[in-house]
Image (cartoon, rainbow over all chains, first blue to last red; front, side):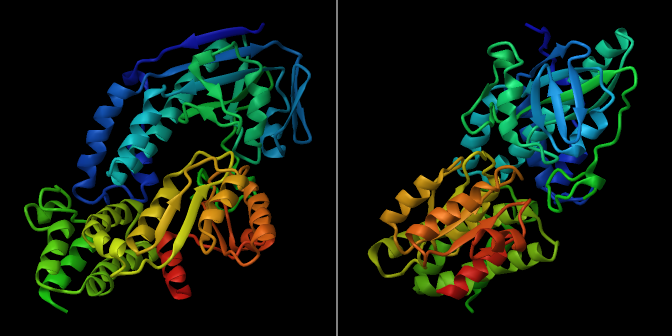
Length: 230
Length: 221
């Protein structure tokens, strides 16, 4: 058993960036057509009632995490992450595996809205869900940073299966490190999480590790929708 | 073109679904696609004319704006919603055989991928363009596409993926379909894909947006 921490942050504690939401819809700041902003505001207000954030992390002890040549090894388990993820983790001495979710009601709300004849609201809800999930992961990353600081260590950026060439199938291995029913997130046979708007991943910790920008500049994936350079 | 058809085309382009819909704000209280389609039918305008000379015109205009970056997915969605409201009035003519659908189109997000928004948008645009769309949902395995093809042997197939790691499922599914039914057209879409990828896996085309795809499919009929 690994040491684990579990949190239920309040919605108002999350730093949700509405510019990101509007940007994901395709519009630049101030370009959102009149009428759409009202729909975004309405859905955001409702999201506050539907989202039940949960998140947590497990601590992998020092000297049992390593990374080199596109492979991250955690307590003897190898993750084929590609170099984009492994390189910034190469100086880690320990690692943190994390999980966060918007909660189970969100998927149902999103699907019911889209299928129920309001695809625009459904689309906006989907984008809001992604942004809220990311804000939960950011909130958790701050707690992880606090934990690392208290133990005289620093943190890497956070990396998740499904991105940067790290196969989503490897989430199966990642989940084996979590306590049972951790954050009430389960993994489907297809390796995707349920609730859908959940984020899992790894943060390297150590005295020599550095936080580095997301490595989109080095990625070979031209059309990745998460590309932060777009 | 009659004034009603012009107004209807405009309602589709602007995404004015019906009289009570609040969007777009400057058309508040005006008739929407729902009422205008009924009005056109009441005026004796042939359903085919309503579809081709009005609904498709409006959808084409917003689609063209989308292609050049003057409109975005929300604009397409609200137009598609208006289109679908109009199509409800034309449905009886399709059902009775007075109007013919363009064909059957099977669509799904590939196995391992739950991201279905893009797929749903394509479904709405194709439905609004007169296709019978059979939506298999998300996380669809190759077997399910094959089983559905048994029921719709003339159908074309569209697959969607958002994750770079799940788009590889498209190759497996395309091969499985082509093995059983070599003449079935298979198309792929999704943010991480490319024309090269489509060619590499043996698919019949990659389309970056629903409007281009709808136009292309229309050219096959």
